[in-house]
Length: 440
Image 1 (cartoon, rainbow, N blue to C red):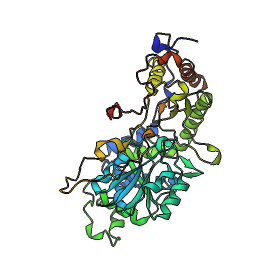
Image 2: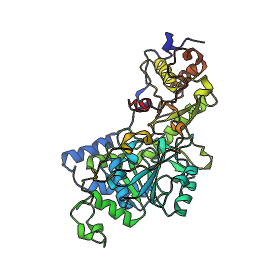
Image 3: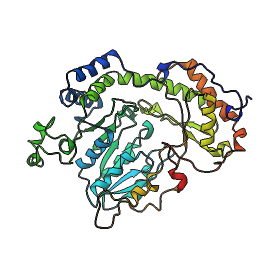
Image 4: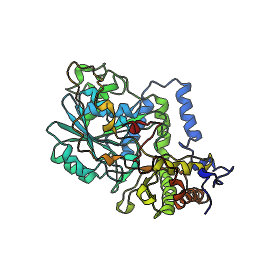
């Protein structure tokens, strides 16, 4: 066996670099450049004509009646909370392992967040939902984490039994299918990010989708004042008296440069995602069966799939590699790549551990702030471990095979890494440069 580069051996990657199209994203063509140039030259940033076109096209693609574009995913999720009437005294359930923008804004409506356990696939555990439900529960925030579709059959059954709203956060999962149906089409309303690093990348943008006219009208009223909404708001008995003022006190509509880019991305999104899935499944097939790592992907035999495979991962099981920490494993992979990429350990930290949900009061209330329900029954092993892998955009087997060899080399030589592994047998879960979990 060759010595690992992290320990002074020769790295598998030398000076040669993978072709740019193996990773370049988003894919921009002259068609995209021309559409963006038209917005710039004609100063159409603040209009709505292009945005309306994109909304209509996206709604048709998604299979929902209404789509509404926002400045970013956080704003679209906030509008969704406003739309369902989330308010003081309400509770909303959310998986604890997700990006903060899935749920942090609930505090601005005076609602409590109740955190739900997750499964090994990193998604909400439907079997834990009943524990989280109280007479104050208003909604469930479902997050299709890393593009993996949640178990929507079980979740919707529970939600319907308790008469709860379901909001889907599709930021990681545009185009993902659950049993042949696009995620975002199960709940009462859905919202998502379309920022530049997502699978559906349209600059900096968010989108809200629903079939419910009332929820759509309320989402418009939240931050789309006057433009793109007059024909809806003035017909609404609930909202017509408030026309001309954004009820959320914010300006949330997207600028049209992003809408123009979104139209171009939508046109080719499905075929590009099909190629991504071919590449990622080939890579995962090559790693299947190795100890310590397992592809984070859904069984596609029932018509499910993972859209554009945003931020692809390997589930990590340190007990199969002598307790080797995920951070040490990731460092060894990065060393083998020798500048041709990197490997990260962990995922978003568990939100129920963060003091924001325990002590911070964004509303400056005069009464005691209590936005989080009891979390003492949450499993401390929620920091399910994973490590990142390359996000291949096309099926270049020659180059994918080279990356496969990197992960195989580290697995086959893991015992060499154990001696100086300071984090051995410690649960890990750090991303975004944060050491928050280590301080707890």
